[in-house]
Amino acid sequence: MTCLECNKELGYLDHKNSMEVYGVELCARHKTRIDRLIKSNNTPLAAIRLYYALKEVGVYPMLEWWDGKKSIDIAISRVKLNIEIDTEYQMLTHEQAMNNLEETMHSFQNGFTTVRIPQVVIKHYLRETVQSILGIIEGLKVNIKVI
Ligand SMILES: [Zn+2]
Image (tube, rainbow, N blue to C red; front, side, top):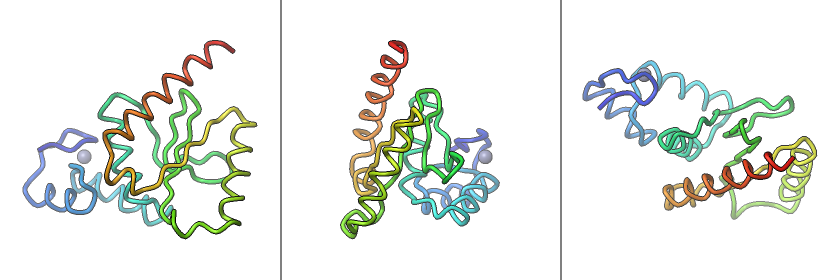
């Protein structure tokens, strides 16, 4: 049991606190950092899970990356991939859907690809989600080389 951020050995309580809330192993200091991030950005829990799952397979994701206009849940800057977690998928209004489409358009125009992932998918298919994102990263790498 060690912290995923700093490899610090975790005591029983630190391990329990962090696993119960985030499902990942974090020391008290790094859990507090994530707590603050969530508080100020309203980051979905699924984003935290996915962030650490991506780190584990050697991707270098950034959590709550500011793109100049808004905070992106997870960004993989090397291939200009933005990942947004949809939390209220079933309650998506047509205005929200239109906003999402426009945001996707703007990010494409700036050379970024935006992928929207419903949080339920991360909750139930974390491994498969990670595999799909790895596939997207591979595809983007090929496209970047062509340009
Ligand atoms: Zn730590």
